[in-house]
Image (cartoon, rainbow, N blue to C red; front, side, top):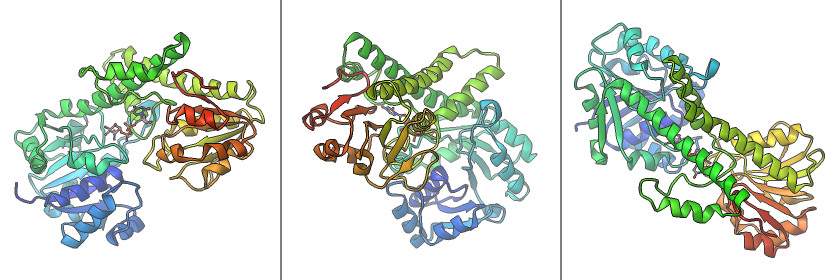
Length: 428
Ligand code: UGA
């Protein structure tokens, strides 16, 4: 398709990735944000988000002239063909998505948008939001389109440029096809549908992933109780193409800025139409239970008493490859340990600064110093390259709890330590 004039409102990891990637596809993109200093940094090519490939794409867009950054959206949208709304939709009161940021942007720009300009939601928004936005604008000449993103933090650029699918929905004839065409060069299958269905795809997909993980964590618990090993169990499951191999790693519970908020929001959406979504509710409960089981395992490793136990944590981010701490299970586990009076020291290769209740150090060996137990909470590959014999020398106790099944048990054992994973036989 020919280049479109696009405005992206919001320069978080979704907005900035969307803007930089659309610019790389040849569209003329203006990214708008209310944060003046952020806009100034971005306009100078400085990207604060840890997202591989993003800084390079931003630099390329700035050099080619296809990408620019402005404060406030109102002026930028006056000659736009399409406006992507990429502002936060956090968990609000009662667990439902808080749409205030979306509504604010719509109120700011509705009267200056040129006729026919598409208003496109990228942020995850409750089913019915497209209709609500249409009403808010009071302008039937502005098509509203839902185009949910499926970007994972840490791989957002490659997910955007090599998507499994594009999903676009609108109730205005032709509008969804126009948006789908913006991505034509990517060659991905496009699901073009009505607005409500597109909005629901995003929740349905994220909640399915959350349920899959809760299921795997529950099977891992069964493995421990039955003397089986989750590794061959998930391997055997994953070869079945109907199940698939990904998203089968057990862990300390799923977290991050999306799955917890989206499961909670879909439960509220279901409630609003008087559907008791017990299956999803159980997945959320299972996630809490998983965290509690990990805490019990850590307590067991220090003889049952967390008070005054010295606990070293490896990893704080909700997954490897990101410095995002939002809804991180690692952080939640750390705060429970602190609340029980444990002395917690933590290291994460991507996290610096202070965190309440614990000491954040800047290398993994400091975590081991005097520790009764070392706990792996994030699957950073750096931890597999540690000198475990040296770790053992520094530690006071000899227990390693590996909630990501990341380490080679033999290596830990050879260092004179014991190893416990999730759903796997204990070693030592
Ligand atoms: C998730 C979805 O995967 C994306 O498709 C979606 O676009 C995004 O939310 C969003 O809604 O914006 P993300 O939150 O970046 O992406 O993280 P994931 O890679 O999905 O991981 C979520 C959680 O599951 C993490 O805590 C991770 O450690 C955990 N996980 C993942 C496991 O415990 N085991 C696995 O095998 C995979």
